[in-house]
Amino acid sequence: MTSDTNSVENDEHVQSTLSKYHLSIRGACNFAYRDVWGPREKSMGDPWSPSNPNGTVILRLAENSLMHEEVGEFIREQMNVLPVDHLTYSTGPRGSRRLRSAAAALLNEQFHSRTRITYDNIIVTPGLASAIDGITFAICNEGDGILIPQPLYNGFNVDIQNRSNVRVVGVKYEGIEGFGGLDDLFRPEVNRLALEATIHHAREEGINVRALLVSNPHNPLGRCYPPETLREFASFCGRNDLHLISDEIYAFSVFPNPQIPMATKFTSILSLDLVGVIYPSRMHVLYGASKDFCANGLRMGFVCTKNEGIMGAMSSIGIFSWSPHILQDAWAAMMENKLWLDRFMAQKRNLMVERYKTTTSFFAKHGIPFYEMNAGLFIWVDLRHLLVAKSAAQQSDHSALRVTSPNGPVFLRRELRIAEICMKNGVMIAPGHVYVPEEYGWFRITFTVGKEALQEGLERFMASIKQVEAERQSWK
Image (cartoon, rainbow, N blue to C red; front, side):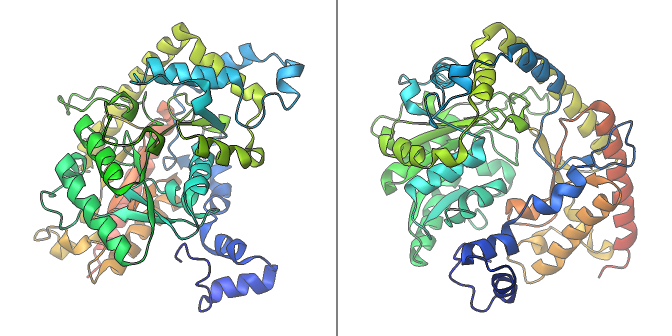
């Protein structure tokens, strides 16, 4: 189903939904194709724990549960209901002055913004899904497009399409000069060529491209873009009069990995000298509490922009997604308490290193290849060999696994089958195709869970792989 909800005449599923439930066209399309969370509720509502050994080990979601107790304790200590601040409309849906000031200080001090950010440049949202939805609504008309490099975080499809009905235009790298592997996705010259090819193709198809959205650090690849590539993104947007949206939600989830001794460090787009490259009003940064603060359920995020029009447009619909001020104060307190924050981030980083080592050592022991990373909460695991019939595995260079291959549907079914077998064995992992890569056979597996849950999940994963190997004997 495309993002064009008018193209439903020949879609029996949507037509049936329209008739049965008496919905709008957009409501029927969303029910039929875009309800990601509904089907997950059963498994997510029954997570594994030592006291619930039959529950599901969830290694699919980008959650960091390593510091839940510390966050919970901090919030409990902060809980003090102030009627004027918390039980009234207070400053309105743009967010509390306290949180917006704390966010501005974080961007100035920790993200090293070259130009001063103030609370007037911040609008608070209940998580980054709401932030992306709001900024998409503000800058795009229905049917417009937003460019996103592939592979891409699958939630972007939800955030951009489900309400605003805007198109996600994936930036493809296959066939681009200089591209030969995942490392090349971070090179400036490869991105320049890929972006120019993609926007040219989009315009030929009649798509009005309005923005480029990048995740830095990257989801799902777990690496940071170097400054020269970020500058290339800005230059491309400047040349084409596009908005540049930088999702920096994993900024403090970067850790040392000895296997990448020269790993690129996190650089915020705010820290670069982009005078004459892109108008300041076309550049926007997103940040949230979910990942770095181990608080997905807090539902806190913000957009930083110097575009007054975007601030006003998002403010106009802010009442529909208004963050509770008492929770805003809880997050603000975390950012304001520099001693607690430094200690928290250091402890979290150490635990991430430990869990990453546990997971990658397990993969190495069992001969499971993966892409080394040093940022984010997940590992991009390479199971391409399991999609190829055993008789053909030795001579395969994986070119047949490309999404554009004539046998693509076969390999998609096999990828889905691996995820299905894992689910039946009680471990939920993410099949790679949801991240729109250019070949099948990759999976995203989260490692930032409790030690016992991680060990149980990895054992269930390995049992599933053995089952896949057995089935693979009959594949042709």
